[in-house]
Length: 424
Image (cartoon, rainbow, N blue to C red; front, top):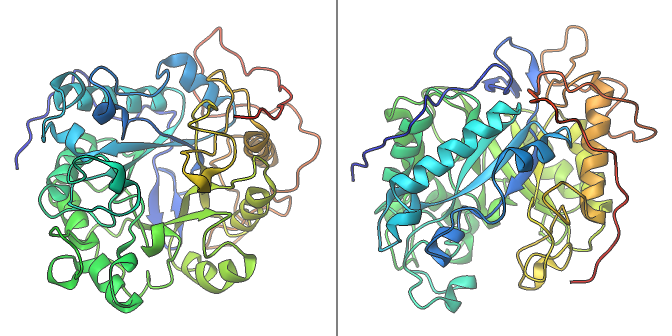
């Protein structure tokens, strides 16, 4: 499939947004300095376009909403995408798909960059006839209306060819190929699931649609001329990266990172598991934990996890920057809702869970003496090594300069507010 793209502006990152590339086991900026992508997930753009006929974003997407994210000292935002809406196929309303959708996403990414934020773009919902999980509630689950175990061979490569062509000159955009693969739920063994994950096609049994593997999607990105950092998450909803190194996709651009998701209810949710499974991976490749969270409307789990990731120079982004509601509660994520929610309003007022992330990002920025993405290296260190004043050591937060974050006057960081627990 060939998709014609027209966008009314140049898709290049302004000077204030981090432009990561891979150097050994770490991400570095354009000057070769170690950096980390720290921030939030912004859900909505993967479901609003197929659940309504007049909305692409769930909540505001203008300057004020982006300023609120930047005020938490975030350096990156993960944007969830929908295959059918981007390509304008399978009957999605033209008002919210095709050129309209692509232009809206490109505009939002440009706005993120204006405020010093990198963008991680991920394929969240894709095509494929699957009736498990949340798809069993859908009248026509074959479309991009729910979460699938693997990307589809019919359109996923075309999606990434189009996305990569759009953002190939914007190196503040990172491509996360497929948000949460779970071929292990359909395959007979974990080795078989990893083979399906990498190669797709005949290596994927038990599927009712043709599958594209991660190598196919990475090839589509590179053939489009994009050398951007690409992140790839493992099996079991990207929580199991145990087979990542053995099944690593071949990248001619040598700009590949590992994605990992870690929630308090996942199988790999203990420090012992992190040390055994994730630490060896982080010793050899940049690690981006691009979804973290917990289901109790508190922050003890992510506090422990962020401290562990800090010590390894890894990146992390919490789910999700969506105002708390009955559908999107602060806690109770694992019981059929879409949370956990970091905020009670789009002005950036944190939930109790969100306050843990905001405090931590503020401490990271303060410990670095500048923006939270810039990682100070120990003298002579060849890898990402946090300074001895690890940013996980929280305490009294001093005034922190925003460094590279581009702020448009007269906006200023808002005073810290106390979060209160609200029942949904």
